[in-house]
Length: 339
Image 1 (cartoon, helix red, strand yellow):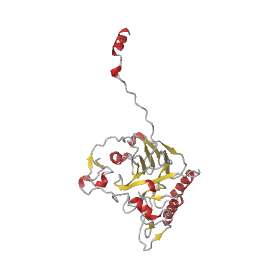
Image 2 (cartoon, one colour):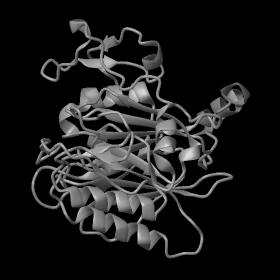
Image 3 (spheres, one colour):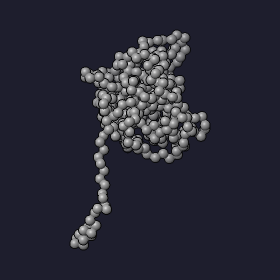
Image 4 (cartoon, one colour):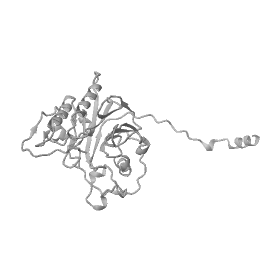
């Protein structure tokens, strides 16, 4: 959510240095999206109402087919199926504006998108709210709640079948890092970042420091950085700034960060009104198999992305199954008579 919206009025266009990968490559990444953006059907029966508790049942794959969504008035607790090793790693980047206040929509979102990794901003969580209240029993949850106030906060949730660990990096900003182990590929470091408003002059610098910390070793890192960055002035399709963009220096600072670390920002379609605020940047653009903007659970839309990498799956212990048909029922009966 933009706490200080930009105003557009000047006739001049501000251009910035192109990314090393170029706007053409960013546009090519977004060509994987077959609907830009994926919007809700206009039929009144397909709208979502928080006051009534109804929610939209819509498969992420059905967005391609534009099928009529199905309603579900009493969503059940979501438990993701075992991740198929053949399919891409699924990410969603979602601005929540209160997780606990939208449980129906939240559970339905997990049902329909079946994400492996959730990047969440504006969770509005605090120390009095436990992970059990988030209806994510089959995920490992990593949180950075805002210490004061009732808003803000970031979270990363990773399917518990996938090996993941939090990366302890101190930062004064709302930034969280998690490492996901992969097979046949470098581990992926995933960040959730929240810039609270367009005027914020510190979050980008703190994000740069955390990436610098990760980059201290000689071995290069695979990065996926997502969140709500509140930079409404960018036209990401051609890497130009909108006329009259406020706080242009904040916009160019973020653009410089992407260039310096070889990151490609892969979201072009608007995520709140006409602005693209919710972003995902990665140095693995060639691994992206799909990017979509889909209906959200707040006044922001959600970014859905698939990355063609294979994570490391935890070995599940084999359950103990009692073979009652092989039990010595006669011997047990005789024993009971002697007791």
